[in-house]
Image (cartoon, rainbow, N blue to C red):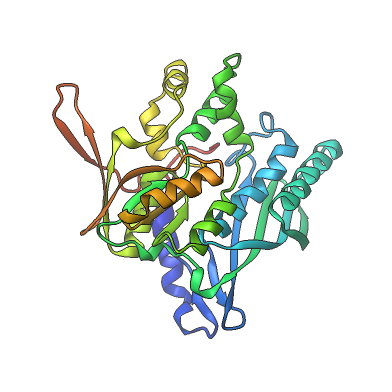
Length: 337
């Protein structure tokens, strides 16, 4: 079974549709629970495991602590919410390095302050297999302003909030010990210390500018396929419009990698992926400017199913490739990303 099949199997057993107060359960960035009829609670959880999500020898502990917060509040932002509270479950091996732990804890606290949320409890345990960290984040949103994955409509334009492939490039550069290129610093930082687009998500939702939204954690090919499935639509992506930094091709050449695969399937960029009515284009670009981000229109929602990448062959002819679910999968891909 792959990761998607496991989640679908668990969802089928959960009986979530019969639970009072539950608005949305498994299948979106957060669970959504009614709060008072006007506002909702948003709940999400994510785990970082040594040897799977990070290399303890390469990842500074303070940046890992902040990353643990960022990857969770990213889900809150992707639904237009505001993160409020954090619960931490921490597993560490016996004889752990106290200085490492203190730096990690400081990064965690700094991340909470940056995103405006408060650590309120959790659990600490011994972990014989290395360091593990699980965060649960509780957020809040106006009930009528929550943005789900299921709202995309044929004819919508598809957007991302920033350049893609940087985190995957950064991880590979770190693994191979490649340094000394000024343009590569942004790639390494995107893997080690990503920034969640919480403010942009809130403003997109508050302005009613988008129909569907999620964050990019497993790569464009997989995450867009999830959004399309939830919405009952398909998507066509223009390869020429996918945003990436100029140095990405250089990094790929030095590491023997395919920069195009980083862009469509690298994962961990934590940019926002969203769809909108075509008439909102200028408003979206203006909002991106206000948030210091260069939003990019990358394709369109179509009737049907699946995700198609439209490119051009070397002879100038058009090429269309099905790319759905070609991003990262925990039970298919090698660990460490």
